[in-house]
Image (cartoon, rainbow, N blue to C red; front, top):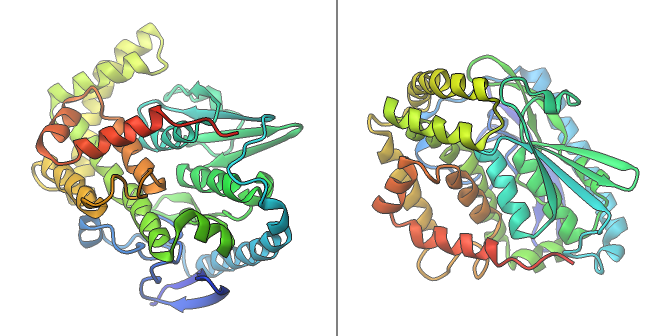
Amino acid sequence: MALVTLVARPLWPGGRSLAWRLGGRPGPVVPAYSRAGLAGTAGGPGPAAARKGSPRLLGAAALTLGGALGLYHTARWHLRSQELHAKSATAQLSLPSSLQLTLYQYKMCPFCSKVRAFLDFHALPYQVVEVNPVRKTEIKFSSYRKVPILLAQEGDCLQQLNDSSVIISALKTYLVSGQPLEEIITYYPPMKATNEQGKEVTEFCNKYWLMLDEKEAQRLYGGKEARTEEMKWRQWADDWLVHLISPNVYRTPTEALASFDYIVHEGKFGALEGAVAKYVGAAAMYLISKRLKSRHHLQDDVRVDLYEAANKWVTAVGKDRPFMGGQKPNLADLAVYGVLRVMEGMAAFDDLMRHTRIQPWYLRVEKAIAEAPPVH
């Protein structure tokens, strides 16, 4: 049965249109809805596309409802962006001093690391709340139980942003367009889907898409190819690269123990809880990594997949530009860097730097983040 997918496809540069697409993969500039298979990959993430089976979905009714929801919010964004266009010209890349950001995270979570890379590169001030991975008492206020969660407080208005890619897309849209953040969040509506294990999960429409008008998009990207490329590789980081981390970090019992020793040191654990987590957690994650290896159809030596992914990324960046974003990192650069950064201090990271061509690019991004001027 063909999947019914609703897409919002901006025309470049002459306007926007809404279209239904039956089956197949969305066109190159269409935002893919989710990792749960609501749309095809944006350009094909590589090995994962060939190896991973299509995830199961809730059914035609849920798809149609979710698609209609995406259409409603995209159409509303179109009208709202026209209304705000005159105001946004003076608000680009500005952050009100009254906006306070609080990030709820696990330090070693690659999705949380992606968000920190974005916030640090844009020099956005934020507070960090380290969540206990066992009790999760720090996020008991939230019905959404995953990290990262970002709270954005502006005056009396408090907004909660969920999902790393939604957080990044919403904040980047906010910085470029000047639209109200509370309005922007509505353009990324949550919807229910079923993952490969039959578990109901929350996914978000339009998560790799910046809600910009044509002039803003042209100014930010310079052309539709750059925008398409950024979206494609952001999704690749979520759909493929992130799944290589655990199998490589916990590849052997020795590596698993060393990794958990580092995690316990960096994370929020009590003394007894940390001691238990180090040994029990290392053993558990070693076994889980084996299941992840099978689930994602990784090679017997998972380092090979990691090396291939790194070199694939370097090839995509190319030799003629320091970053995929050109002279400065774009959202894809920051996503890939953020995912890989969680392995620092572990054997997998040292092997990655030694056996692939990624180190020069990685160090350039690290330097760009360290030297980022604050947003005014």
